[in-house]
Structure formats: C-alpha cells, structure tokens
Length: 110
Image (tube, rainbow, N blue to C red; front, side):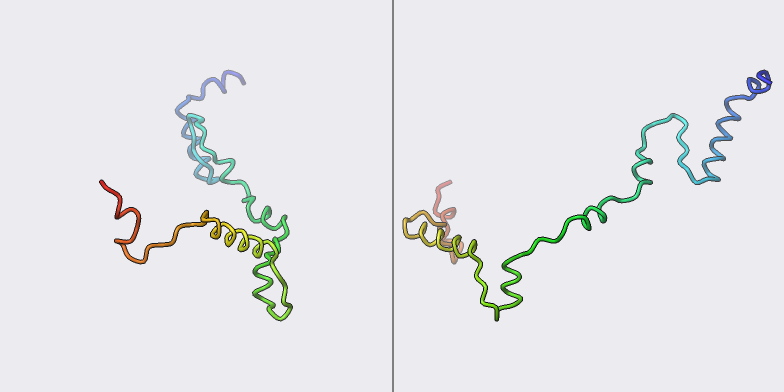
C-alpha cells in the first residue's frame, strides 16, 4: 500500500490539486503564499458594528427640526460668546479678504 502512494508523481498531484481548485472554486496556491483569502471569504463586520451602537442625539439637529419647542443649545451659545469675547480683546480670527489684492499674502514681499 505504501509503495502505491510513493508511486504517484508530484506532477500528477499538482494537476489533481489544480483540478480540485477549479471544481470547488477555491484559489489554487501551490507555493502556499499568504493571500488573505480567509479574510476575504469572511462575513463583513462593518454593518453589525454600526447597528451595535445607538445613534447619537444631535442637539443642533433637534433644535432645527422642532423650532416650536424653543430649545437652546448651551454649548453653541457658549462658543459664540467666547468668539465674541476674543474679538473684543483683539484675539479673534482675521477678517477675510474681499479681493485678491487685499490679502496679507499679496502684500508680502517675495
């Protein structure tokens, strides 16, 4: 029996595995190179991960959706107050240039 298994040539075994992979629609990989086929065959995880977490409540969106409730976004009001205070102290963002020649970049020497 062992003599019969030893009599099979490697070339015939390679042909058998090639045919087997075409019949069962698997990747033919005679060199056993890493292909990542295991991960490509696996079920995608993204949709189940998205469904796991509940959607976050967006306060600004709720305020826009129901203006009759007269809700106030405290975080946004505080941010606007901070921006106003910075402008009073001269620490605010610079004004945008209306034309190309008005910008700081245009007046800078090259």
